[in-house]
Image (tube, rainbow, N blue to C red; front, side):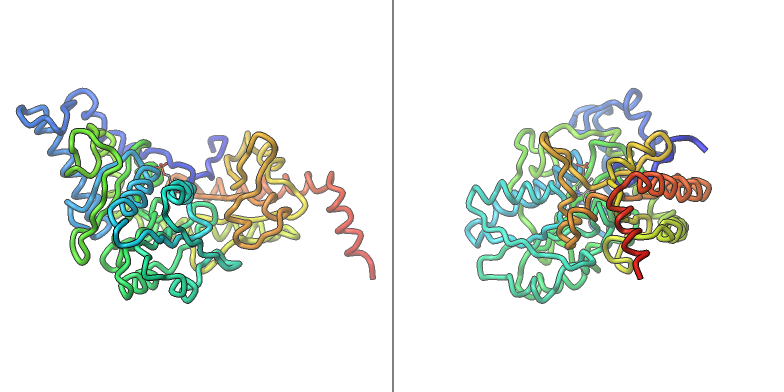
Length: 397
Ligand SMILES: *Cc1c(COP(=O)(O)O)cnc(C)c1O
């Protein structure tokens, strides 16, 4: 085993060697600008980009010309939300989203709120799922967009995408979903799922960093956007800027590999994840956060009461790379807003770790991780006064 063991695959994934190999020729040999129309260097680059566009479109059930390349899901989220807000302002500027969205959506919504948008935030239940009736009740004649992520990055919870899109259709609203964590892990199909706009990111699915895409539906309905990056009119004017040709080639290859391997991989990872979860649930006062039914196969988020996640991470980081959803601000450590939205107390939110397995995770690593995390929890609890009080209370008749 190589240490530290990487269990932070929702933050980023290792670029698959097969992806790296597909990319390499596009740095030096075929280095052309895909927008150069007058010579072979440009044509080769453009051809590679179009093959990748096809691979990506195929993996989501879309048409090639519905894929707009971006620098990643953050940019795609910005383009979707701001692009729709700018385009449909005359129709209305009410947007419905969820409190557990990625910051790339929440901060973008906060930004356009200052520009006159009205944003409604759906709550989630203890499992991290939205309530469809509540969604429907929030819709007003001014609503233009529903923005709800496919799968959550911190807890892996998968929202009822199909049902959400039915509501969007019924009221002729656009439905945007951030699928950065879903693509390549579970089946995603823009037509079956009824999605109008969708963010994707290569580095969450064994591709390179700094490249992603926004799916933009072309018919039924035809979605129009105001570009957020102006320049040479690349990507049919929807996103200017010289294309990251090697990155895009890698993204295409990564999609192709995921489509080939997803079924076996997700079955394998679900078994390993369940083993990890079961092993760690042996610890007293340990809990799984979020729905165990509606979630990604490779993710489990757990709280270990009476220990701080920070302390655990410091204790194990030579051996295991994991993360918590906490955000360090200058003054203090803020517990994860996602876990808070689920209704967790500060204490439990502060004691949670996210385990995200991936393509390169082995069973040996999971067996080791169960032992190592359990040891850490036990050792840290021995020094914890609240834990001691808990034990004393338990002893009382
Ligand atoms: C990682 C992530 C993003 C940001 O993607 P980048 O490509 O790193 O900009 C956005 N949304 C979700 C759900 C993510 O997991």
